[in-house]
Length: 242
Image (cartoon, rainbow, N blue to C red; front, side):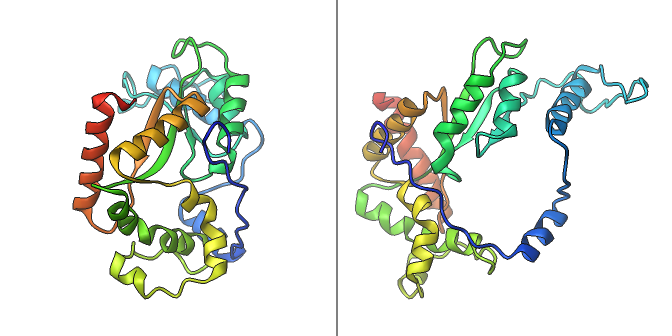
């Protein structure tokens, strides 16, 4: 615990290398040299500004991108190249507590350490993500969130991600200790409960990480429950729980 915030140890995830490579190929992943990522981000900025030139000095334009007022954010799940690039280019950072809670503090620290003021930002600006499930009371929220562990376990295993299970489906789930160990970091850092309880937890997340913004995601079987979760939290936050 750091200032009341759970910072779990990293999970031990055993992935099928062949399956991982297959997935990376499907999304177009390619190996890149150190620093290539920063160059790609600069290229995006140049296309938006209409100032891009190729390696031979030839200008190239992207009418769709030029003049856009879309903000460029960098998502980082570790204190590696993404976090450093966001800081060095003076861009806002989205740090992932919901995916890699074990590394969130180091990620934010690496970003702030590397930060240089830019035309975009005069100071570091951090958004931190959180998995949230809010209901009328703690018991109802826990029931709605029951499928989260099995769903994350499927995503982290070689089986592939399953459709998010309903509470009834989870009741008969073949849930092993290995599955529990595989997702303990994610389950233990999910914010589940009444609106007031979750708001307190998110306030702690904000204070410990120094976040300027919090972004929440709610993964649940029933869409109406997701909408209700957002409504309850928004009402509580607006009432002064922030």
